[in-house]
Image (tube, rainbow over the protein chains, first blue to last red):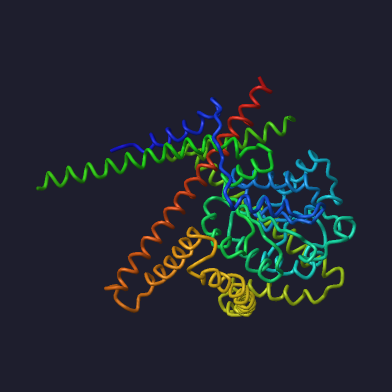
Length: 270
Length: 211
């Protein structure tokens, strides 16, 4: 019986090899990634954009590069960024860490150029409530500063004042951003999701409910290329491609083995 | 990099390797990592609920004069009646409230935000002015939707024209499964890349600082 641990070893080697011998793989830009980039690019400078950190630490490898690339783009365009999360476990601290690091790099000031609202329980109530008043849902930001003391929040009451919502998520909360926020308040929603959930959301691109889609590390790599900010995702594509080639080879070998053994069995019984 | 940051990286590296060790076989290091994760998550949630719900959304606003919050607080307290079998039925009042409001909210949002726009997006003209490619895509979408729906129509035996259409539906479903599986492989590999990259850059990087 073949020991599957040999496959684990091969996969590990395929991931480690490009780290030791760096290689670059060409990343093609999909129309969905281009659509998201163009939508942000078309926003007037200093527009208010909401960026969500709706993901757990377990999917950081896929989702954080999307948030980082999005922040590079938004800060370069001088957009004012409002961040929030519907994820209690890690969401607020990831948002704080990533946004502060990128803001420092781009010389942005907290409270003037960006605000982190943090986390609030009951996402359905939060998403619906912000349609009426963001301050009613989040009286204070993530650092317990009253929103009334933050200059950026003076001009933001509800979704009417937000030009675009960039949802980065690893779970089905995206459905509610689409069915509640986009459908009821007509605020454009662009999404960056994990690869597992990406196929589901292509239907929302076709229906026009979602403005652009980034799927997993590949989507993040595309956005990094579009905003010309090479990061973890572009670096990871070499490993990703090598493992995919390995898996394709294993699937072919497995199928050849299956058909060969079935043929041998049939011959033996004939 | 400070000493505490190096310690954090080493703790994270230890637990990453402990989880990966399961790929070889089950062992005490994996068990330890599993239990620590479960315990930490539970503790974190308790603290979070206390701070962000009990204090921030209930206690502080009530102290500031929002006394109407006493009603949701009472509904929440009723849930604890489940712990006493004789009066456990009382908790159904809270559950009925939650179910009623949830059904009300979701009925509208699902119909308005999911079902109707998706149906509308499927009702396409079969001949499009954008060219043969767009027409072909529209045809594929309409045939895919109809044949897949027919596959899930169980009130009549799948024979004859109905059977052929259902078979076409199965092909569409299989292609969708294939796309999902491909994306799932990519997602899992991405997570592995993230961890390996952490071990290679962050953890091995601390060796240069220490030694």
